[in-house]
Length: 221
Length: 313
Image 1: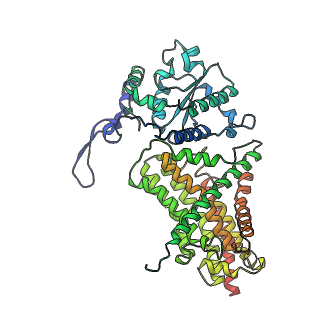
Image 2 (image 1 turned 30 degrees about the horizontal axis):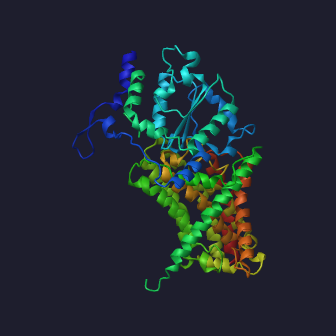
Image 3 (image 1 turned 90 degrees about the vertical axis):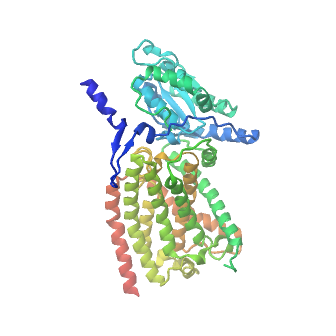
């Protein structure tokens, strides 16, 4: 039964013949035809250093967080919007779609199923982009270190800029991490997107090792 | 074409540039007001500037096709078009670049053009959220446009012209000549319709991040989004200016430039604040609620405005 459902799920990704209204049938391979199979490439910083410094300052002072709660640590992000912490005054905003976000907050443990979504969302973000790993679970697996379906180190799968230790860290710790990330970006050290493109094969190999049901294109443009 | 004054292009560009700056400052102030109502400290006043620059300097972007490119262009044409065909300051050549080239009908067209452009662009993005948000947005904008069109018909009958410069000219002299006092019903209908097109609560279900994310621009990123953000700074100002021109006597050119700009800021700010105050006070409507609301009071007031003006004539 499980096998049957599995096949059904991927049915719309298989090769098939399609007959358009004109009558001439043609073959469709969804993973090839509907998605780009181009590989990511690196985007060098601006050639004028003072300009790049100014851009980096802007990038640091205007942070768009992807509002996607990936683990239990995501609950610590919500108080930041409240009057108690009010992260907006530090230039932190929340966006509902990865396309418009610059910072991905991975909130704690990442099960294999979530990892797939994390990879998809991360790849859909436009560079330069940064990742915050919240809680011990993203660093070494935390209390799920020997779990059968939870990854241990997040930076084997996507580049992480700042880790926040604790189980759970308080919202202040998250604010502190944002400030640390800001300094990193201003110093020009936030090149995670380029790092991902450079070491693309290594990251993909690691991802494929744990994600068995790979029902997505190699790179999610 | 021979006697075309090329300086007008420069004037139009200056107008758009100044309006972008005014819009960004206003966005900062409004962000601050929203935050203070929620007992927060809120964004820095200059935050919208940083957001816009940051968005323009994103390193890579993804396109989904030609219409995806043209969506933001349509949107910007809508905002910029209203701006350059409106007499921003009555009698000042710098802010009247192309007024004689278009009338009220063209402005009405430009107000809808951006929404249609976004519908096509968001449609080509292929994201289901874009498609559903476009249907919601078009339904709501159409519903809000009906009372607005009735109000505009009413003042067209009243002044017997569609030329905005003439309408503004007819309101000069005393504040009692404003349409607000000569045709209060049309003003009421239009100001209620104004709420519907400002994308603020209670009519912000289309673009609200907490609803179906984030409406038509779900797939828009990088410079595409930057274009849309630039338009979002000028579009509300352009629309506010249209209402100031039609109902609140426009902004006349006084002897002192300082006084002129002061009146300009005061009028646009007050009219803009109308949508902000309603926005912070009322919760969000669903689309079916808002359509029903527009089809009730604003519509009746609009019809009455036309009736009274026709009888008066």
